[in-house]
Image 1 (cartoon, one colour):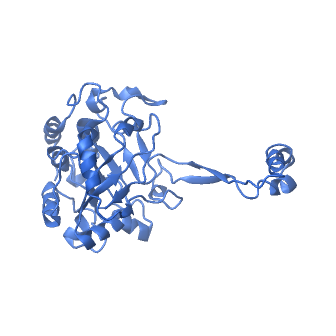
Image 2: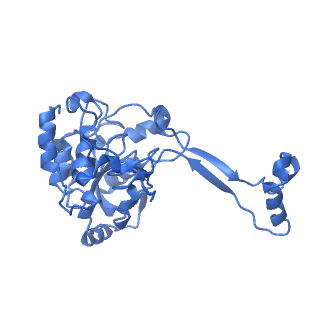
Image 3: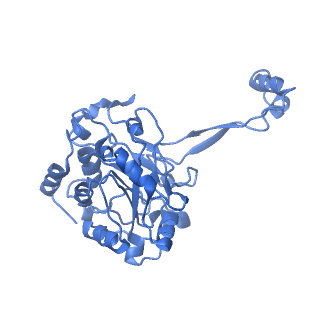
Length: 332
């Protein structure tokens, strides 16, 4: 649904949560995940079934299609050949230093090990956007100044601030693919509206409650796994879904696509890019999860007719980061 900047500002005023949980709050809508909510989530577990919602972090990931983010680079720093091979065949400086020390240590010791490292953008694959990720008019969520994010990281609203909640709550899957009767994928230009979300919830006989984490299945990740086209657009939430999330007191929202919201400017706000990001992260204090693999969960929910589950999805606790990897799981 296209809108004007005036429409956007009215929506921002309506959904803004600044001060709702205090002037120093850095958790936003995660405050809605109460101890009672965590217990409610645990009570949804009936079978002990664990379903991974995370994609692979590797060289074949979706970020290879974009210039400002790259796929993870995985490097072995110690491997099975280091203890002896490099001593014999490596360069002189290495034979006299690292490899020699390693070889000497292992000479009369059965212990061996491998080690590795990874270099990657923190939002390279399945991830959470921190509340410090997006801002406008020089303000972050709760009125914190945008310049509090510096080259040293985010002083306010860094991803590590959410560790107190752990992002463990009742999760609810809304399966747009199944609702539309699509084989795999909801194509671009077919934005997901608030009314459609209500229709899906009613069809699935599932209620959205305060503190829930809503996960939206659009089929994008399943299509990416078959095509490898990381830059291909797909359907996402209409920007007006921000009000839908606010009214239902949703704690966080995640999707299997690259932006959660619909990237089509014809369905957005004139003169802006990703208006739902602006409303959710900056005004509501509601985190967004992107690139989640929801295909297996959608299949399981369709099979047993149960669309609620315990969601466990804490981000990697990187101090000052504006986003972080996550390997979420659904437990049913």
